[in-house]
Length: 380
Image (cartoon, rainbow, N blue to C red; front, side):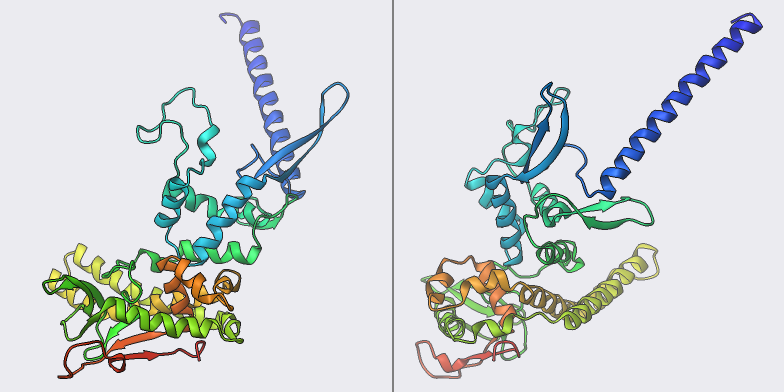
């Protein structure tokens, strides 16, 4: 390196190395673009399929194709349909783990890091893994072309789809909806809490409380305690009405979706959420006090909750394939076997609202006339 010739050779060899690296990068990029244009998968075969190879007599691979793995594909379909039926990510995750269904990472081998303490063999599911699996465009037989680029778009893949493109799109809308991030003031583990049931006096939401010496669960007004009814009796009354509707010959007529109404409800929820966010920003910058932010939030929350409930109802109504499973002559048995979240999804599709009216002094016992059931346009 202390002679002109040596320095020239070093620069030449370095330039040749850079040139070869650039050529290799071009070949790899062009090969990836060809695969994308042909709709072929990149990388390892994802969960839900297995890869089959066609080889020459010498063992050289001449063609590879993806075929459905029945066992794994059934898990993907089950996750999709249960999410569309109204079940939460947490409920779906718990179900998979309780049934001992191995996660996609159960067969991975890590060389440079250890498994999590609570998941030593990688077989357990997490909410993030369930969500990531449900959001994959490959589930619908699609792949991203030019990912991350301005001209990014979805194209048809060469592998068989596990769910329809419509189902995948609704799952993406459901999981990515900003309304899922709104704090929920009431539990959704009961049939009529969180917006479906309401107080007939002040219009407030219902919650479940245990009162009296026997600690009988009651639906009560969550805001002022205006009204209260025996939870089991009210649920029984509502169940009889809904099962009767699901058993009717025209039970599937209300499953048609309303795209325009869904877009309007989403826009209304987003605008209200933006107004609450703006109030928070003003507090962070010192322009508003906590009391001012609380005042705005309390004023807008009822509208925001109503808009979110409308989005959930319209999203659920778009999925005739899932909710149709409850309709028919066996509606009663299917209703009893369904999860609470699925039952709530049906009530939201029907637009059903239940109001607890004041009873006055009518003595002990449950009075069905004090429970007002209102149907939406789809439930009539």
